[in-house]
Amino acid sequence: MRHAEPVRLKRDCEGIDWLALIDLFKLSDLGGRKGDKVRRSFGNSDVVCFAFDGPKLVGSARALSDFEYHATIYDVAVHAAYQRRGIGTQIMDEVLSALPVWRVLLVADDDVRAFYCRLGFESFGNAFARIDRLKLYDAT
Image (cartoon, rainbow, N blue to C red; front, side, top):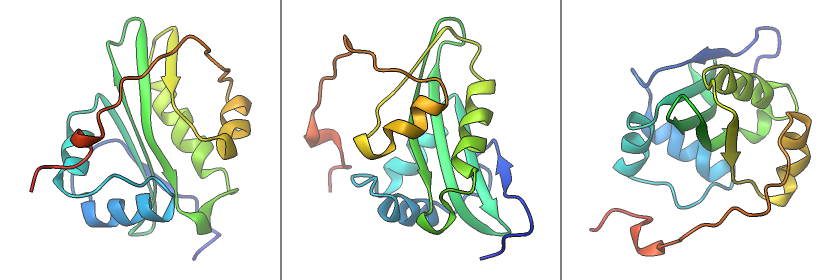
């Protein structure tokens, strides 16, 4: 792992190694993301951001937005060996800068709550989710 050079951010899906992204999700405890659904989810997103150390994919995030009022950020991941180096902040700054909206939502586990609070996120107690685990994976 190199430390001297900053990571390179990429804002499109061109040339992304989707298997490397799936591996990143596994290493980042973002289970449930596998197969071609990963490629399609990023391809169908309004904003994407990938972080690279040389050719190695080390971070990701994506967002859906109407670019007027609302956005939701998904799949924020940073390789464990690259965490606490500001990469997650760089990725989030890049994504947030592309979202000229008044409310940005995201779902995060308790262990990363402090990270998002440092970025200005706060608890939003009246949010609801409808979950259908049967749609988590492509039908085989």
